[in-house]
Length: 222
Image (tube, rainbow, N blue to C red):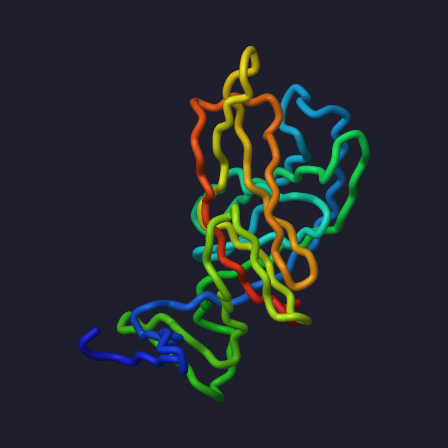
C-alpha cells in the first residue's frame, strides 16, 4: 500500500491496516444439544441437526464443544441475516449424549457503540477498521481440519471453519462411496480432530479434503 496506516507487531505481522476492516467479537450464544444414535449407519445423517440465524454485516461463527463433534454443513446469507446449519455427531453410538455448546459470533466492526477515547482507525470510505475498545478476533493459527491445535495452558480456543472438511470414502461393495467429515472439538487448551461418517448419504467418489480452520483465542469473551 503506497499510503495510509499500517501497524505491525514484533513478529512483522500486520495487526492494523486502514484498507482492511478487522473482525470483532459480537456475542456468545449457548445451545443445549442432545444426540442419540442407535446404530452406526441410520437412514439419514448420523447426528443431530441444528440451525441458527444471527444478524450482522459479514458474520463468522465458531463452535465450542467438548463432547459432541460439530460439523458445519452449509450457510446462507439473506441481507443482514446469516443462517448457519450444523450437524452434531456423538462420540460413540448406542447412547444419548447431551451438552451445552457455545457459539462465538464475530462480525466486522459496527459504526457505533464505542467510546471516543483510545485508538480508532477508519478507511477511505469512512468505515471503522479498528477501535481499541473492541474485542478483536485473535487468530492463533490456520491449518487443515485433519490437524489438531495445542494452545497456551489456561487459555480458551475455538475452531472457526474456513473451508468445510467433508470428503468421500469408498466403503467397498455394496456400500460404495459415502460422505465423511473431519470434526473438531475442544479439550482444555487444545483443539482435537476426529472423523465421522455422515450417515448413509452417498458421495460422488473417494477423495480427500482436509478443509481449513482458524484457531481463535476466546479467553474472557462473554
